[in-house]
Length: 325
Image 1 (cartoon, rainbow, N blue to C red):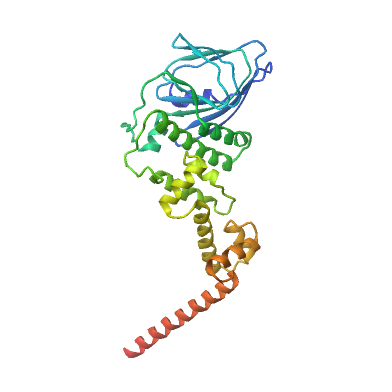
Image 2: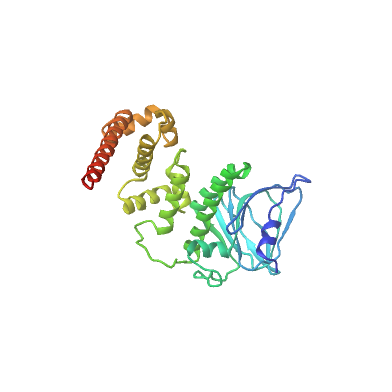
C-alpha cells in the first residue's frame, strides 16, 4: 500500500501521446493535496489504474454529462451509471480502483489525505476527531457547491505562481470541509450556532481580507473559502457580525485608510489603491459618506488634534518636572 506522498505525486501527470489524455494539476501543501482537471477523449479506450493508499480520498466533479464506464473496486465490478453535469463521486483510496474509459470525460478531481480533513476539523496527530465512515465510494451525488468550486479551479490550474497556489488552497479547504460535513456527518470539537459562521469560517474570512484587502474581493470569493453558497454565507455573516459582508468589508477598508492617512504622507490616490478602492474618486465618495468628512479634511483635522494633544502632554510633563526642582 502506497504512502500519501507517493500517491499524490503519481497523480501529477500529463499525457497526450494519441490525443487521449490531457491532465493539468496543481500541488499544494500543509498537508499536501492535488487538484487535477482531466480531459479524456479516447481513440479506443483508456485504462486508469490506481494502487491503494491508506487514508486518502478523491472527489470527482463531472463538468459535462458522462455516459459512465466500467469500474472495479478491489477486483469487484462496480457500475458507474450516467453522470449528468454537476454530479459528484467520492472515492476512498484505501481501496484499489481500476476503470476503463471509452467515452469523452471532462472532470475535476480533488485528492486529499485524511490528515488534511483532521487539520480543518480539529483533529490532532495520532488522534482523529473525525473518523470517516469506511465506504468504498459515494456515487451520483448532485452537489452544486462542489461544481462551483471545481469551475473556480479551472483558470487557476492553467496559471502559475504563488497567487494561484494560495487561492487554490482556499478552494481545497472549502472542498474538504464541505465533503466532511455534508457526506460524513463530521462535527468539529467546538459547537456553534447553526445560524452563525463557525469559528474557522470567521478566521478564514479575516485571513483573506487581511492578506488581500487591496484587491477586488467578492462575496463569492469569501463564500467559496467558507464552503458556502454566496446567499447562505451572506445570511450567516450578517447574523454573526451584525453587518452585511459588503458593508463590513467597506468598514475594514475605511479603517485601513484612516491608519494610512494618519501614519503616512502617501497621496490619496495611493491610499485609495492600498485600501482596495477602485480609484481616488470612489475612495473619497465612500469615505465622505461614512466619516462625514473628506479624506483630506479628516487628515488635517486628526493631525491637528494629534499635534495639540502631543503639545499638551509635553507641557504637562514640563510643568511636572519644573515642580520637582
